Structure formats: C-alpha cells, structure tokens
Length: 139
Image (tube, rainbow, N blue to C red; front, side):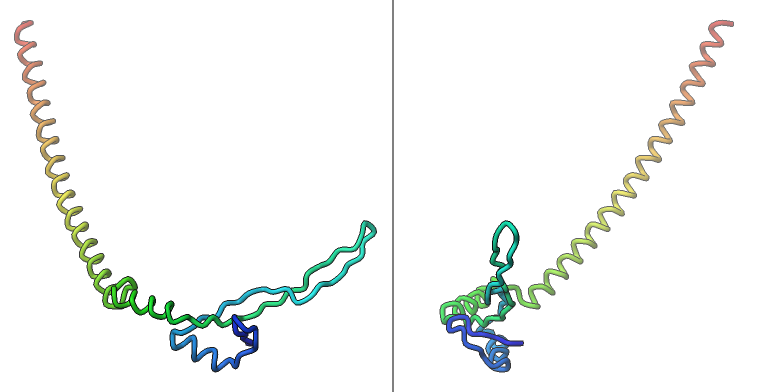
C-alpha cells in the first residue's frame, strides 16, 4: 500500500506511517483523486472522462489535536474498558430487576384471576338462589 503525506503529497514509507498511526499521532484516509483525463469522441461531440485512482494519505495530528485527545481521556469523555464493564454489570442488574418485577406481576395477575373466579362462583350461587326464590314465589 502506498501512503502519501497529506500536506506535502510526498510518498511516505509504509512502516513509518504505521508507526505514526499506531502511536496515536496520526490517521490514514483513502481518497479518490483525479490523475488524468481520457477524451472520448461521440457524434454529438467530445467528452472528457476523468481518470481517478485511490490514494492513501497520512494525516499527522497537530499538537492541539493530540492535547485534545488526551484531555478527553483524562475527563473520561472516552469510555474505558472499566467503564464499559461497569455499564454491562449495571445493564445486567437492570435486566435481573425487570425479570423479578415481571415475576411479581405474574404472581399478582394469578391472584387477581383467582379472585375473579371466586367472585364468578359467588355470583353464580346468588343467581341460583334468586331463581330458587323466584320459583317459590310463583308456586
């Protein structure tokens, strides 16, 4: 892979570029650039078709950019593995709490269903008594 300096457009040694990137002091981006033009003739006229190639450019971070990245790390704006682990534990606890709440809700629902069945039985008994009483009145 060929890599060019973003500012000078000069070719840079691949290993040198990777050392800069791996040290956190730079980044590589790929850009399509026009390297020439191909003329095509048609009955209606000539057309210029751009010829492009992909180039990899090394952007070296300025002192200000590096300082900003460091301040973000110090101020915990960038989560650490520990932060992510703690978040995963919190999320797991939240899921567990929700499962417990759902179990309680299921128990409560079962109790309500039992009460409704009990009331249905009571209503059925009352209806039977009323019918029996009505039958006695007619006789």
